[in-house]
Length: 346
Image 1 (cartoon, rainbow, N blue to C red):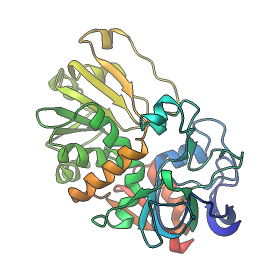
Image 2: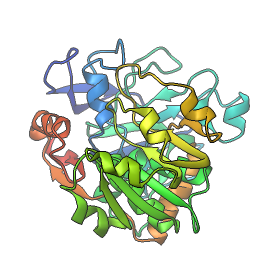
Image 3: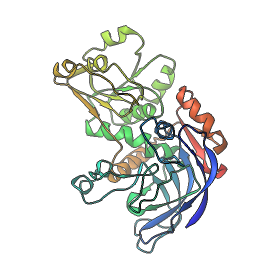
Image 4: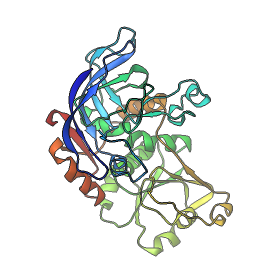
């Protein structure tokens, strides 16, 4: 075991504090990564504050991890010391079920092993990226192409793949009208990726406060959802709407913006249940769907796509001592558009 410095939440809703954790020894198929940067995802806050249910403490959040390989196990063939790598939201799965065999490890029927707030196959808690080092199986380690800086690459491991996966699955591209709900950590990546895929992109945000940013990121149109006229004007417009917000929405209102056979896909997860009148989907043969992260193969595809199109996250780099302040700023939408921790400061 190796002792490394980390920032952890000692209990639900408690401020994160500096501590030490134990990382396992490098096994035959393991990669030891010197973490350089770790993104702060809204889901870190949901879990550290038990917004999504009972959690495991102490908790070291962080599933947007970018770093450099320090050591590899004797059986590792994909990576070598010095390689630029990333780790996303999962570090293992059963690898045997129908979904795992299809490259959909994120939907492992036995449940994938989360990068943090989970138990590994030995029953030990997993700890995430707010730390100096991590040991990960090579099959759940991603290669970060040279075309992306490590700090801007870190958020791609969750925010990037969480928006890329539904855009690809629902065929966002030339001739498609795509709306992104919310221009935050996920939403800004959704705009960049949908634009790069060739779709006509509209941002639906509460206000026009970030309109200039949205257009610079690649949006063709920008509307305020606080204006009732928006829902009248855009009725029946979109092939695909991707909602990135974690606040409950009036799903019926957003479904009304879809064309026949359109889909409203939720990647943001509110802490409370939402209600729906089923006529909202029956009328127009519409789909209300959800999407998680991507599998390892698709996540690598996304990283390569981003490198090929010059896409990285818009970040604000912070020191580890600023994590608790950053959490409050995320909750008040005061970030453009992803906080990334410089782990050298841990």
